[in-house]
Image (tube, rainbow, N blue to C red):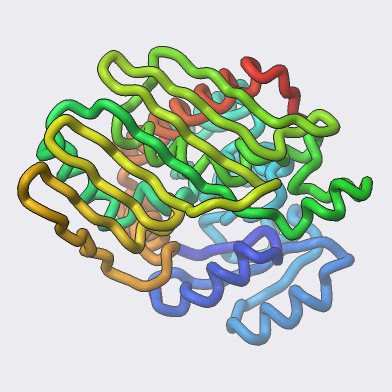
Length: 325
């Protein structure tokens, strides 16, 4: 993979702290705004990236890349992913994929028509511990209840209350608790159970944006509650409850570090088969494989999953009367 990185924010710093351990990924370029030129130069030098650009078109025409990692603010994902696909580049796009299902479907159509890899960077779907959770579901019997709570007081919420609207709370930029933090819970659940029959969203809405909220997803035999909050804090924990046992995730659904399986009459068993300490390692290792092998069957599988999540998100926003973009 010959990679161009779009962005220089926190997620890019996190990615760069790990990527050197994946030698098959060549860091060909990093792209940002003119305002971030100094930061781009620092990242280029400290992480041995071949080139830096403040113009994406120039990067596409002048750099030796085959893949673009879109790690920009949410509202820019669609525009830049589409431009990269138009230049016949594979795309790895940060979550949320886009702001609407319509935007997502357009990107999907372009990618598949041109046999390009298009995947969403969503860590939990690629973690070995997540695969272990999926494999262990049958031991729980009939799954009755799933509850996921990812609540973390945002450092930007105080500024928001005072009238400074940063991207994390800006509806035009795809902000809000659902898109930023609760989406991990939704990916977690949809990856286990698939498409829900019904989606509802009860949210605390301030100035047109959800600062916290509860998504309720109904399945034939299972009821799901996904809680995401940026205006308050609680213990971050998820539980999967069946009539023969439970799985408890202590911590966020994008990391899955501490997991316990509790089977009726058999006590508690720890689940830990992770292969790397960094949450992004396994997904990018798989992305490199998919691109190297042109595994379009896996691309279609991953796009089907992402589409289901986008549909849940759109239904939830519609239910709450929230408009983004």
